[in-house]
Length: 315
Image (cartoon, rainbow, N blue to C red):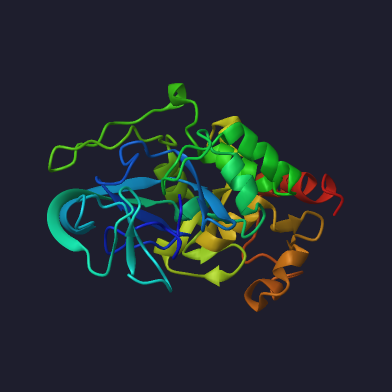
């Protein structure tokens, strides 16, 4: 997905995006029906990679859209020039003009949310590399299919293996493993099948009842910003162990999954990776004790997490 000022929308007024949380488009956009819940996505600004995530939900609604058209041929494939005049140029018939004609049409509006698994990779891959990983060479669409196998290899080579693991653990690349109902929209459209972590709600309620409205690393927080974090890879084991989780603030959960936050198992104190030390809110957690008494099973899981993210990485 192309985000930011470089997202091509010369034929309309643009889109409401927050690239690290959600992405908007409509039914006039090429490939507008090709995205589904559970799909992995990569965001870039046509100059560098911004990050990766997995789509959690797609909201669909009806709306209107103001289209700007070439006065000569009527296409919306027009570009806005920064310095040259006339200001607009048609990419189809090459006509140059100052003021486009306008048209109001009804569209289906889509918004994909993916902030839960967002992993920032700002600049890890450059423009040339990202373009080379498209399934269709020369594709200029804002949303285009990516060769995910090659993309994952490129991320690993660039030193970002945790991003690959994070996406793989949440993405529904293999549709045979999908489970869950189809959700009918009020106006007749249907979202994709939703991958359900069976028992996740009960898992969260159980941990919340024991731990209370508190993040294990940072302390008290509203329940709505807390998530039930597995102390192991649920994607690999597929089981909710009774004492296999902790309530974690959403950002803490993400950093723990990536290994940027860990718990030293002998002292049961937080270990903050060096790349987070420039952020005071995380740096102050380093060597601090957790905010709750742990069960033996939780300590065992944290020790395995430590081995994976610290000892195996040479930390």
